[in-house]
Image (cartoon, rainbow over all chains, first blue to last red; front, side):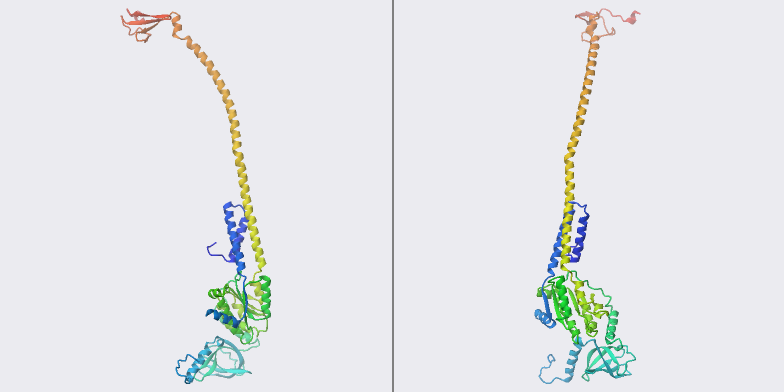
Length: 74
Length: 420
């Protein structure tokens, strides 16, 4: 895991790995806690990601959106 | 007409005017690389290598020129041939005549003119390596989709309905354009340009929404002519130039369109595009919930296993010293009883030996000897004398008896050897 915020796909892949590692068992408390915390963080990140995809529905004619953009640029 | 540099309001010299017209005409992208079809008339190939002709149909006509060596000319083309050309508009200043500069010319075969132009474009794009270029990855969670399609079309309502089924409220911007007819190409290109602007972070920020990260361009099915715009170069070039992934979503059964070939993802219909790029939100939630559950269960089990281990260790720890102590205690008891026995034995032996020793000791005490009639001679210094050697006449000695002592003086000495 790099410092950079992982993408949704990366987060899900890492989450899968963490869950199956924990399910395999045989880890100490320290390791378990560390993995659990990382997993919980990734879960929060994924859930946030899902909510940020929701938003406004625009439906505009080409001319309208072009003039809208032009107006914004000025 | 401004910016001509003319200060006076007098009439503009015609030459300057024609120059201006030429600039305007040649700058418009719509007039560049346009595919056109029509009938060849006034076909004339000059010794210089240039070929001149007019392209006409029942509604209009225009002069055209193929400059020497510009493209291969099918020898079958003659007066009256139906052809498809790729040409850009130009203005011949000397005569003020608008003409088409031909880049390609193909006679129309039975397959139809669309196939011809398309083949030309495909060949060219292939040569430029556009089909082999790496494609952009479709985002797993699109944050803002731009949909370029016919406003109010059935394709659009299909897509909207599907999106709402899969992910209600997913952010999207529909850019309504003409998808068929003579203006379709230009509008689709402009639509893609709008999507491109919406993908710029600065523009998105000022609009208060995430940048567009996925573009769907398409329309429902139709005749090959209806779909023509998606086979044309301006659309293909715009798709190639898009900074975010583009999905080509034109409803058609068998044939592949140029937009399909250059897009980052090809969908067979607009609905197919939605199904391929819009995740089903409940499924994502389900996956995340499942992960959360599995994570919690697995972690809890790990904790429990660890606790169990600790408890076992703790119990063993509690019992261990007691067991040791008991073992030590019984060992000590055994040892102490064995010690008692052995000490007792040893004391008994020692007592007996002591009594014997005492008895033998008293038997040889000098007092007992003196009692039997012997006497012990000592010098005045207390040294017991056992030999005559060293005694001198006149030396004082002490004679010890059992009941007392007597002082005496040596008169003479006689050794036993001397008497022999």
